[in-house]
Amino acid sequence: MKQWQAHHLHCTQGKRDWPYSHVFKRKGKYCQEKLSHKKKIFKAVEPQPDSEDVFTIWRNYSKHAHSNDYVRCVTWLEENKKSCLYEYRGKCPGAHTHRKSANPERTGAYIRLQPQVMDL
Image 1: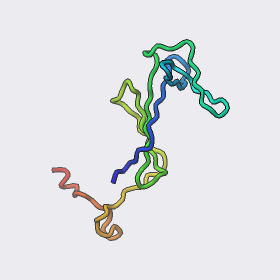
Image 2: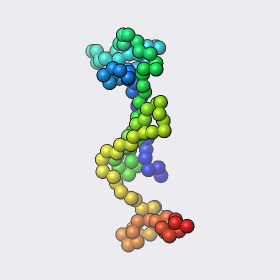
Image 3: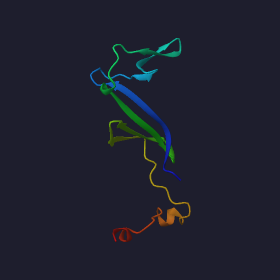
Image 4: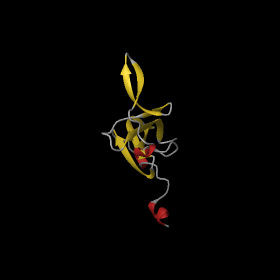
């Protein structure tokens, strides 16, 4: 079973010399999102920024398989995919025993290999 279940992926764009704000690309133009009469409206930013001045932030949210309260958020810049930031929210559910392991109360958590074997 997978330990983390993907929740959703989120993308944010902003201009480098602006105060940080969300911009979205709609119909080839950078726009800001507004809410009017319970509808989303995208208003074009004037003047339009150069594409080199816009940075993109990606965020991936996922929940732990054993606890929906334990959430992981991975954030990275599109320009620098080698570096990322991991954030964990909630309480870690801890280690779970393997389904076919012996009684965990008597023998402890399932250990795949003894540490001495791993060091070889």
